[in-house]
Image (cartoon, rainbow, N blue to C red; front, top):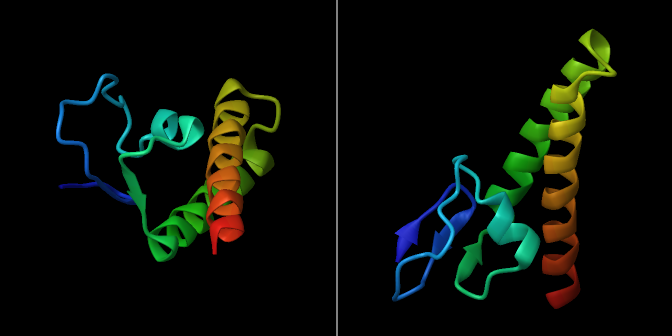
Length: 87
């Protein structure tokens, strides 16, 4: 078990893709079977990401950074939707 920002990873093998960010967006997007996501942690990260997007919206709404942060938020929201559907 390896703790992550959103929960953990239970893979007994090494990960094939090492995330470049602290949040494994690629694992979330691909719905990795080894990933453990804590709904509480996910909600915290979503709220934080929404704040980042809102701040960039005010300062630089057409920037690359804004578009990238929106894409990251979409991955988080889809993960929340999958979690909700499982429950």
